[in-house]
Length: 92
Image 1: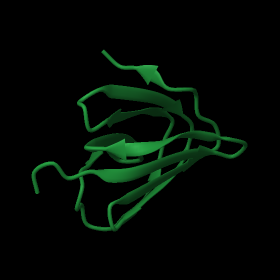
Image 2: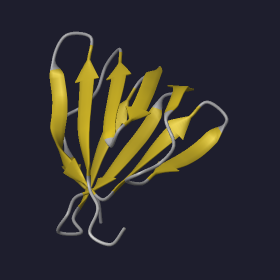
Image 3: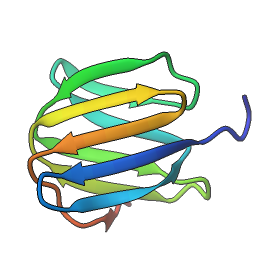
Image 4: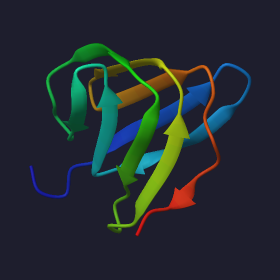
């Protein structure tokens, strides 16, 4: 569906990292990079240390360095839970 978005919540063990609305998210899944788009089928998977890239509704790319954790996606809500995550950085 054109213009669809999803809610994203990235949390570390000791603090929230970022939350907001996104058009897409790329995660470092344990078996390789994985893209999540709105209306994706429900998924629960382990992620490895790496970079999460979020594309917001305006097309801006935000990146986050994270450690191991997991993601859960259902009903256009993506939750990323990690041990540690950095502040947002603008991706070029």
